[in-house]
Length: 253
Image (cartoon, rainbow, N blue to C red; front, side):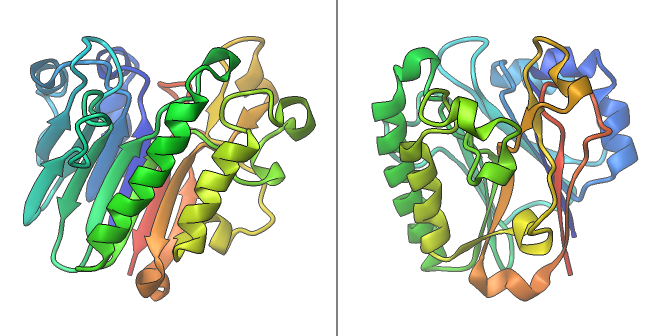
């Protein structure tokens, strides 16, 4: 089973940049996207030429902001948008798709913002999101995928010293939030299989960062320990363009 997660930085813009061809080339069984920047009906209109998938969306109350979607070849047993906490569910950041033997949760974690103005909220989000996925895990294993907006280790960011505790996505408080998920029993699938590989999934659109590979690994598949033996491969598809992020892949046996 091939699962792909991709922050598309606006689904309508992505479709104009060969998103549909990229999906056809990658052939995911399930594709989770983040930052749709569109309302539900706008997402459906943008991908109307994408055949063979059941489509589920969760959009922000604020137009043109945030948003997630799941495209699944097989119909999930159930699909639930949001975490159930109203303070977090106004921005369309979470969709949970239940399959026979696992939950798949796609998430667009809040960015802490310029000058870290939203870091306090982000810290609360991290705690509440951890509690949410652990509540699911009481019933069956969980796969978390998406833009988690954090570089977990120095290997995950091209310039760790210049950004540590200065830039959103690489503060100790955000790292602690990721640690809490790992400590709760989730496995970073890419790092599990590639402990020493330097690969990034996001690059600033300024200064030719992608061409120079001055990047950040912000996009993950985290897997319950109960599913560790099913991790067949984990990839970061740097060669796929169309967004400031590239897709990340988890293949299960």
